[in-house]
Amino acid sequence: MLEKVTKKSVEKFISQLEVPEPVFLFWDTCSLLDIIRLPFRTNSKRHLDFYQRIKTLIDEGQIISVASELTIAELGYNFQKVELEYDNYLKKLQRDFNLHQDYLIQCNNIDEPILPFTLSEKGLKQYLLKLFNEIVSKTTFISEKQAFNKFAHFRVSYHMAPAQKKGEYKDCYIWATCLELAKETPENSQIYFFTRNKDDFFENGNLFELIENDCNNTAIDIKYEVGDLLGDILNN
Image (cartoon, helix red, strand yellow):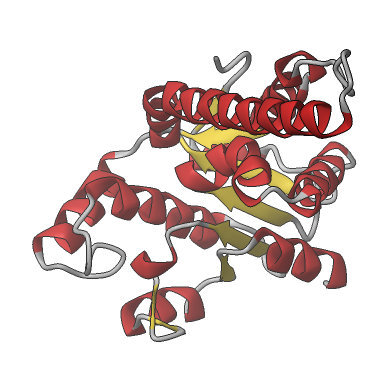
């Protein structure tokens, strides 16, 4: 599934940077999976355009794509589920299309199909998988570290954000990785933490106080909508 994965420690990753004021895009698991599923879940070409533009920015070196090594295992576990969801979506769409076409044929006494084609042959799934793999191949996955385990264990144990609501270890571990990256980055850096798990970081439209403190002490800006994320990157 993952054609190419680059793993580095935080220290090695930062030491090899060649950009004086880097802009990082730090993905969590769901935000990466949404490259595939959000365009068909929303039936919106707009979301596909957003991810294509982000890929271009990564290719051009305007943003640096990064994630936690833990995300690799999460992607592997969830990838088949996303593929199955897409396949079921396409089957339903094909059934609806065929039913509508049959209705038109009966109403107009037409013998031949009006638009004879199979949706699965149009290649959207392959295109989304290709886009996903191309972004992943340009993403550096920060290697695991014992300090991340301790951070995650502490916040889960005491129900502290991002584990305040769901109490998930992996969310805290990924957040710890992002915080560590932020501490090691050069001055005037910017880190966008991109998550689809809004409720882990926000309550009533505002950041949890602890998460806000984390962000105030670093250069991290949390985004949960891809359009908002892209707009901020382009305007800064």
